[in-house]
Image (cartoon, rainbow over all chains, first blue to last red; front, side, top):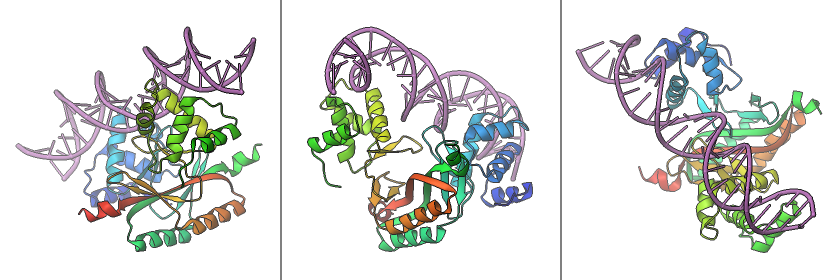
Length: 144
Length: 144
DNA sequence: TTTCATGCAAAAGTTTTGCAACCCC
DNA sequence: GGGGTTGCAAAACTTTTGCATGAAA
């Protein structure tokens, strides 16, 4: 995913009818331009540098709005949620040791075939999906 | 998934070196024989009928042991986790309206191909996976 | 007998909610 | 000006932890 400019992000928000505030723009910018699937606390830490008075409640509120607008996906985990701004068809490679999450496009043609099959069956009306593969990333698998 | 007898479950637990207690057996029986992906509270409610003094802490503790033994998978969601005892390769059809979760075997051959491709790349060592498709179940999609 | 599970209570941690002051449109 | 947003505080809720008692191997 390429890095989007502040202008790009502003447009995205305005297109979705989301009111623009400096805090909101900063939060959106951080979450959309972060490829590491940050937690709310991660985003908080990154945005706080520019808005020291920002609170976690605002982070959560904004993320919820971005999620409703389809700009970001919340990925609930045992400990806390991570946020993904990649809305293309992909799967997540989740390392159970270092907790890194990497998007993977390989296999997306299979994914779309699976979705089509289910959609065509008429038994389920698909909105979106989440596919996580858990295991060890390259770095961690080499460590022992 | 067929319903397993108490004896089947006992064997599964003993094979995994899990100490057998009446409470534990009841919890395992409920979660393994429930196809609806119950929450911890659901399991609590179902087991409490037989063990009124049981607490949620015991439920969580037991579920954690069953998960480590590979008998059950925890599926974290925004609100609370659901538990899945189907350890075959499948995907979950999650209704965003009624919150039902139904296992789906259709597409599992594609799933294994995706997994093989990733495994063969040598970039990630797979342990397990979770594939959720979100949308409306048949009943809910007909309601409006 | 020794080790581990249970029950109870309290704690931890994430996420949500309420509300007054403020800012965007 | 009006309605939505922010910041702050407190609440809600799931899940975890500590510990004494009791049960399994």
